[in-house]
Image (cartoon, rainbow, N blue to C red; front, side):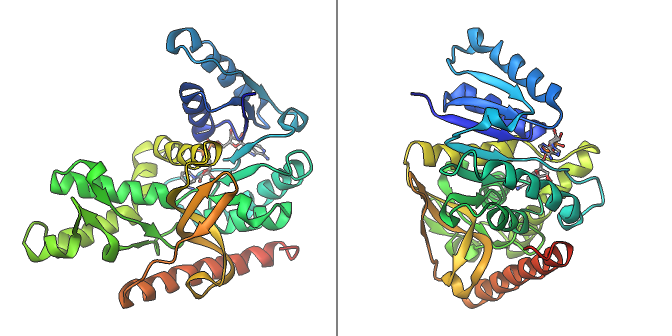
Length: 318
Ligand code: TXD
């Protein structure tokens, strides 16, 4: 019996998610959007490519939540993306209202689903989603860290002329300008990045420029596109999380997860390394952060907490 994957939001990321799921045959796809035509058109278009790519999954588009019933995985991109000059936080009020509506419509129909939230401002929106839906905290996660880490690894691979597969790194904390590239645990060909700096393979200031470019990675693409924001890398990142759940791969990936004392924080979502398996978030990995990383991570999570307080001012139900 094929798994059922519902995508709430059939926009740039939602459509790309649907295409990737079909190509990888991860499960049958329900593409949901309030713009029903977009959902139906994209589902039909992708389905019509099945003879070419040889995949065998069903895809439907809909604006009826009943079609999403008993989903195994739900990936949420419903909301508005940034326009040039906007910060992710500027999306809070409008996307909070949308995520409340989504939460109320999925909680009764798919109580056992693994829910991946992508909508920005990610850390606060995923926390609001979990609160509004009441779904188990280990089954509601946010996608951001994989994308941010992927951008960092890509930039580093270009600078060092090393395949991306040979670079290990994590970008943690909030999905915003305060995100933290964990340089202490960054390795290239098994070597600590700090050793490569000592050996003159990369200048410290170049490394810092790469960290800065990663923090602004989303804004750089928003500026280039002029309308909309990144969607290929965000979709690829969401699929990695869904696949680890559906196939019980127990991958260790950076995601926005509920902290209940880990890293010294409680009752907040933030980007940390987690293990994703058939039970959802199966473990939160506590890295040994050096002093600088600890300070930056604390600042980043505090920024998420500040934004969450703004969300509570908008909706006291939170
Ligand atoms: O790393 C990350 N988490 C970020 C997240 C990476 C990139 C983009 N990020 C955010 O994802 C972005 O800031 C947005 O908040 C979401 C979705 O981005 P996308 O580029 O897919 O936006 P689109 O193309 O505008 O698609 C959003 C769809 C659109 O088709 C709307 O009709 C639909 O959402 N929408 C809704 N669907 C269901 N229910 C409601 N209420 C609704 N409102 C809008």
